Image (tube, rainbow over all chains, first blue to last red; front, side, top):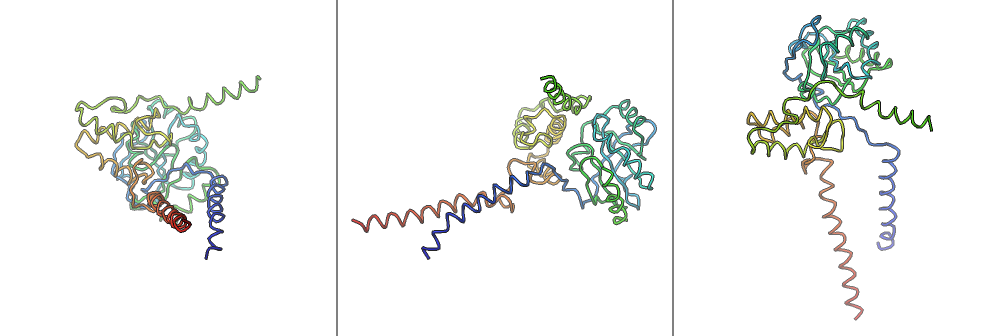
Length: 175
Length: 138
């Protein structure tokens, strides 16, 4: 018994070493995922962000078919990077609605003129109120919503080319 | 040297570009009229974590989103919500991560509470062996 106890410090050191090593090999993940995934879209009503597109409320996201909800801003650089991918998704027949985060109508209009407008509706969220309701922690973020208005997936960060097929698959599965 | 300066300038440019032009939410930097409600809101803000600058509380952070969260906290407390209700509203959306006062019963936190007690008991057990031995030597 005592002979085995002799190894205890080495075992403890091994555990300590493993804990430190995993911290080095796999750095801390700073992404905060929304706990709203799997839940019904919270109630909200946002005024229209630009004249050319209607306002957005949670009722507009119950479509009987899956849709995308994209949180963006004209001041957000990765939002420019994902603009072509959103247009590609729209061309593939996906309905995309937008929430403009902390933005002015002029800036949003300029941004959309320059980088394209894939949105059916755009609501303006000037105080991040709806972003907080959604458990979203930044821009850009994209939510996949099924036909009943349930959030089925949250994509954090810009949509890259390789993400388009993944999102189309998620939309198809949600249908 | 020149290259270093250019690199330095690039570091400066990014955060500026990431700011929004809009003014903060109404109660981001404005206290509530009722001092008791303001005190309750204030102490809750110190226990809520900023989503953007993750090691600061929303009371400490200058990030626009932290300002929006402060405003939400104050607005909700002003209409009579309890601080705990506001906290659980946020936890429902962001998980325990958002609170600096996580529950003891969570799978991640309970070992943190149990470990010191366990170590203390182990130390007492080891020390007991020592005392007994020295008594026997005499």
